[in-house]
Length: 300
Length: 300
Image 1: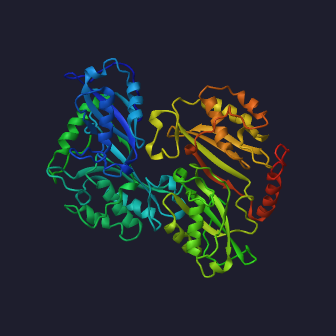
Image 2: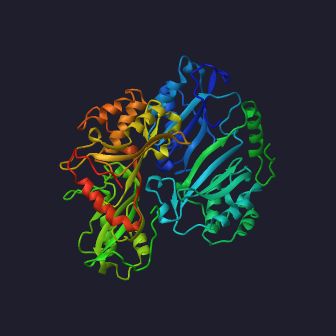
Image 3: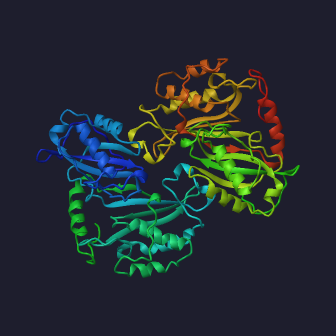
């Protein structure tokens, strides 16, 4: 699933009730977007609006083709591999070569968003509910000599060297199936229980510090809150044990700073094999809709 | 020399006639600059002007402190490791901690240029004449799925897949001590003979195509002309043997397209060991000032 194949076949395993589900792979520089999600009734610039507009133009659809996405990134957050689906009237695709859809959409899209691939979604594919995990990276420069002006839009500069072993010790304590209430903006009727699969900090060859965070899914502002807590530990303002204190809390705490959007990029989304896409979507929906505080069913 | 050490020592091996030579390591996003070189009498935005202004402000010098640079990059060309020197009145540095000079200059510099390091230059250091080689990289995306909007300012998108083996076969033919007249904007009284040490094209893990070009030095627009020729070969408009034809020419030819500035970055500059800096500067000066067409003395 890492790279989607752009097919020019008219194969359509996912045609249903006259609609075909398209699968889109996208990348964007979030700097000048007010996030992914369209804000109806406003003229706020969002990635969703730009992509939906390009899709409607190329397909000449009369109705809005709504996109559903794997990661609803906030204002200023970037994506190197974002997935979305749209259900479009099958008739609009008749005789259309999908590789020409790709190039025509890219000709219409602004410079800061790119359609990397498009195909007919495999049966059961749901961009929001089929993923088994999302992987984000947060990039930091903690020394003047590693600050690269060419990457200033995706790297946060901090003014004190980071203690990477301390950040990794803290990351270890966060792993597993837990209630991340302290790190999440609470949403009515939704659980804050997630499975954190990876929380690792490393220094790259070019001297940047990269925090890699992977979970089945993230609540709103969770990645940036996790990074915010790691930064306090990495800069010595807090000890590693503070993490346990945070994990014991039942609700969001103002002790945790939300790290700026600039450093954060959605790097990839993992899906199960095609034959499990539908079942995975059912499992995720059930789990995600569990009331807050209810212990969630562990993933697979 | 890869990373310069910021010293807070008042050591000053290079004080001469009341002046101290500072060595600066810089990085910049060239997108919004009209190149490196100050254009006196205009208000054109250049990297040199920005850095000279910040230096003068921090040192409170009354006279302009002129910078001399390793690579005079054109408008739109970037640098990850650019070197410069400035001779400043030694009295202005008295009692000044160079790490505070670094942070104060960075506080003044705009977002798209960064001072990575500054120290007192070793004796004999000359940013223009001491280098033994410059290394540039030109980055290309030849498929929609490799286009990364976060790197759009430093990667050129081309609309046809590139034949990398053909580009490498062409690169091989360009190597060595040659007259690059066909690729150079002729400058009165200057040779177009250079030693090309590396001209290699590869595909990176993230699917980009990177052309790495290294030479003792480059004439004006030479890197972008070399890349322009390689692109014609990589996209099948020309055969590899065309290179030999170009190398036999005595002057610049309109057959060679100059590739756009956007994809080009000065990545590093190699210097000899400190004790050979002065001798290297003398050798380079002598060679560079040889009349056009004169066979140049080979490096080292």
